Amino acid sequence: MRIPFVSGNWKMNTMVTEAEKLILEMLDGLDRIEGVEKVLCPPFVSLVAVNMMLRDSSIKLGAQNMYFETKGAYTGEVSPLMLSELCEFVILGHSERRWYFGETDEIVNKKVKAALSNKLKPILCVGERLAENEAGKTKEVVNRQVTTALDRVDSVSDLVIAYEPVWAIGTGKAASGEQAAATIQFIRDVLAKLWDKSIAQDLRILYGGSVTSANIAEFISHPEIDGALVGGASLKAEEFVSIVEQTAKIKGRIR
Ligand code: 13P
Image: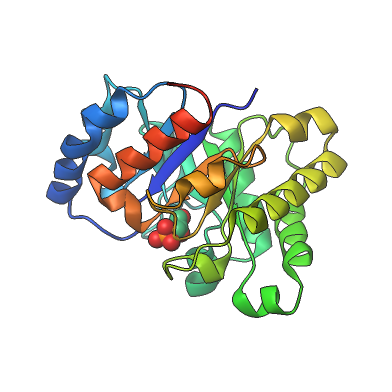
C-alpha cells in the first residue's frame, strides 16, 4: 500500500521571514490532514528556521538540491551530510537544475547515491522537454533518466520519483491525468525491469507541473499517481492545503 505523498517545492522564492509567515499560514491546516505524507521544500537559507517550526508537526522537510560530496573545498555548495541534520528529503534532478545548471544524468546519479548514503530520501525528478514530447520521445527520455539516475543504487525503498514534463512546469499547461498516468505506469514498468515487480509496485511516483487545487483531483484519481510535486501553488497556503486535503479524500484516507 503506497502512502500518498504531496510535496511543495518553493523554488527560489521566499525570504526567511516570508517562509516563516507561509509556514504559520499553512501549519495547522496541513498538520490536521492524516494519511498523506506532507513535505515542504523551502530554500536552503530557510531550512533551519522552518525545521524548528515544523518540529512538533506531522509535516516533513526537504531541500531542493545538494552536492554529491560530503564535505571539503567546494565553495558555495551544500552537502548531504549538512542536510541530513535538518531534512528527511531532497529533490534531485529537477529540470530547472538540469537545464539551467547543466546537471547531467550522471551527476544526478552521483547525487542520488550520496543522498541515500547520508540517510536522505531523494525525490528524483524526471521528465521530457516539449520538443522531445512532440517527437514522441517521452518514453525514451524518461527511461534514460530513470535508468541512469539509479545506476548502481543498492536500494530504492527510500526513493520517491516525480514525473514532471518540462513543458508543464510553470506554464499553466498541465499534462492530462491520462498522459501523466500513462508515463507513470511506464516508469513503474522500467523499475520492474531494473529491480523487481514488488519493488516497483511499492515505490511512490508523483506528477508535477502546473498542479493547482482546481486540477489535483484529475491526477490523483488515477491509482498509478501517488501524489504531486507542487511548485507555484505551494506558495499559497490555502491552495496548498486544499491540494493535500483533496489528495487525502480521493485516496480514501479521510471522509
Ligand atoms: P509548477 O507547479 O509551478 O508548475 O512547478 C512544478 C515543479 O517544478 C515542482 O517541482
